Length: 428
Image 1 (tube, rainbow, N blue to C red):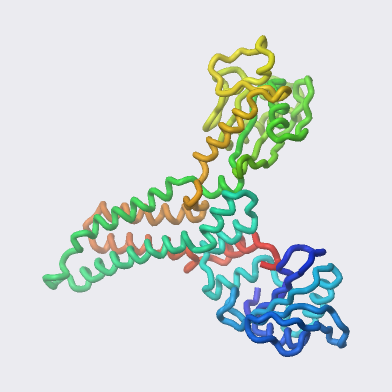
Image 2 (cartoon, helix red, strand yellow):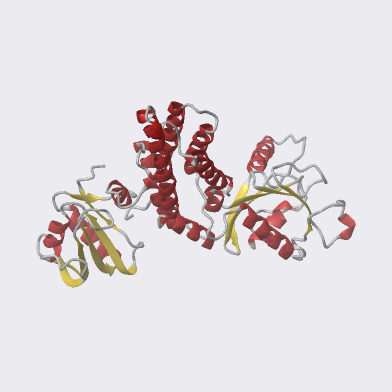
């Protein structure tokens, strides 16, 4: 994409709506305002203007705002047209803009990408903004805001500054080691590096952002007719899965997202697990069930006691309202999908488990990319303590500093940027 093009897009919700906001950004933004609305209003002042097409026909009566760069969201000249939110109005104004020389429709995430290119936000803040746009629960919103408002970025910059100070001390020893006052590192050098490495290690040990974004993966597993699908429907409070007394009714993995107490979950109903079946489709379903069980954050096992597998397994027994069918001695919950017995207790337990597995309010969580770079920085800092060679120490500090730079996008590949900004909507 050419950053010198002037771009435009609908930046509000899809019409029809009360108001539709079209954003224009780039070097020809002011001329676009002149073409449609006459002279632009005073900067950052909304004025009611008549918008007209090239042939002079009236398009709409709208509020026009003008924001001269570089002190704008994108770092460029920027304008906003606040229209009446009908589909025909939006289409007509977009068509008029497309006819102007130098203007084109924006690509997904292009406004935010220009903000990043102009230094208005860094990469960590852009990732937080992407998460904020897709946030569906309160925890997701809080975590995304912590990234988008620069909380993580500020911490990374602080770590980078401390590495730079340490690196300066090493460079001074290398350059002036023959002088009496520069032949050794400061007394607190290794202690300061150890403190920084410990801070990184603590963040690496915290819950990851992916579980917050995608939800806690909870798999219901067990043999045929163990009550998995009935419990699945009860937890979702809908008839999502087909239930029947016929073994093998569930043939594939069925997933549904749900939120309990503002915490995102994804429940998965699986094919009944059994060793022998002549049905080739059911065999595929069983294989997929084993695969998702291996990936689950939590498995609710409704089969014979002790036979469940997974990272975390809870022994459950269904048909709690039929004591004669009880066969397990040590169960976490006895539930009945029919009567609802035990469902409230199970749900509360799931919420408590998720609260431990997910970042809490005010706790920063990092994604897979950020985790890998912090791990690289932490490893380099830990290696400092394994050597007294100033050349090796200087290289370790350089590796740590490079990792911090890539965290905030000082050094980022185009492929990685493309993948990030493609997550955004057109008008963002």
